[in-house]
Image (cartoon, rainbow, N blue to C red):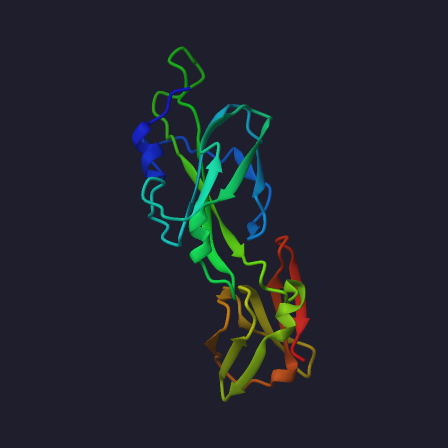
Length: 243
């Protein structure tokens, strides 16, 4: 398998010659990763669901999507950082922490991002089925990576019910008093005629001990009529009502 060394260093999408598109072959088994501070390491599973081998590069960044693997200062090591995954096979990525994690907050989660770059092979020169002009894409998947201190004793599964909601006119304020990041995928207001008005459709992520204000078009908001959906540690959607 041939690959572009500059592409591996940059960890970004590359476009060669246009015409035939490519789809991602490498699939991550999860939409987020949680690293408990008392864990020696965690494992992330991925698989190649395509019919050709892929070269995979993985790294963790601190939030800047343009950060390259060689520039990242995230205090974690991924083994192997670069690996070839055969068609129909899988690979386990082992993630371990560095001593510098000791400087991270101990009263709340810290958010990082885990990147997996899928680099497909170039068509062989003797492949008669390959088009003369083609598009070769290196496709990057990027998921949230939460570092969770073991000093946090609260239960993450009930954190969404701890959210504090206030409304004034057509402005809704959501306060997160917990040490966890909470992702809201939707907020709707139930109307008396059984219809629902979408308050939030794009989704937001509330950092620990923070609040966000949401402007709502139309009529004023009644907190008791609010339903919202959050994402749990397993990537599942959980619907709740404001209590």
